[in-house]
Image (cartoon, rainbow, N blue to C red):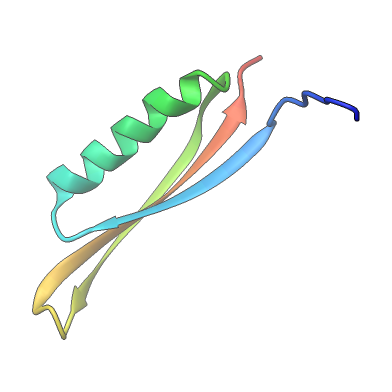
Length: 69
């Protein structure tokens, strides 16, 4: 059996929450987790929409992590 270690070069993660503070906490937690994988943020995109069933704003973010150089 072969044991192989490869570095992750790109990783895209999606987050959503009903308030900005929670969304920021989720992203910050994942940033810390990805530091162990030697990944840093390359790009962040965020959006806000009104969620009619919850009758609240829904905030979402897409975070692109890349390997540190």
